Length: 214
Image (cartoon, rainbow, N blue to C red):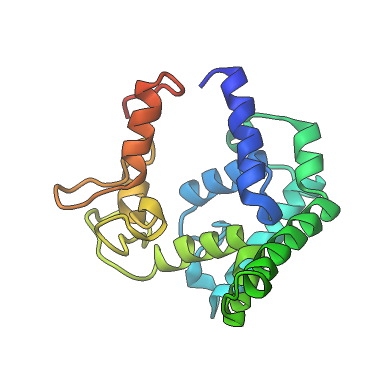
């Protein structure tokens, strides 16, 4: 996408991630490391070195904050050509901004409970709402490297957890994605369907993005 469009989507990334906003540059470095070192000890989030998903995500959190704080410098092959918007990163990653988003979510739920007479049990979803980014990351990296079938005999233990891309919009086609990391369509077999791919095709048709052939 062009530089102006990139800024728009950068802002929307913060707006929709809210309290669980991840600085794109740090996330991209970890994602590239995940592909290069998939399911080895250098992988930022492989489930095969932790007894539970919480341990895996705590390890991921530490690596993320090391990159953000500058305590850890990413290897050069992982940090090139990445977008940088320092002011947006500093704002979105602020503790006070995250707390503000959490307050907004809480008020949203309380409005429906006390004004619209919704069930108080909806409040049980608030912790997931606060931490939606880590929840998504935990599901993809834990389930996508432990449970499901394999189309390709890749060097890692990536798997396709389900064939229809319903859960997490196709993100759980991990075996396909690791075999063809540059493909915009995570579905590879005729019976598989990646729900995100039609969205990308539409954005390409509208000239908002330009899809590259893998």
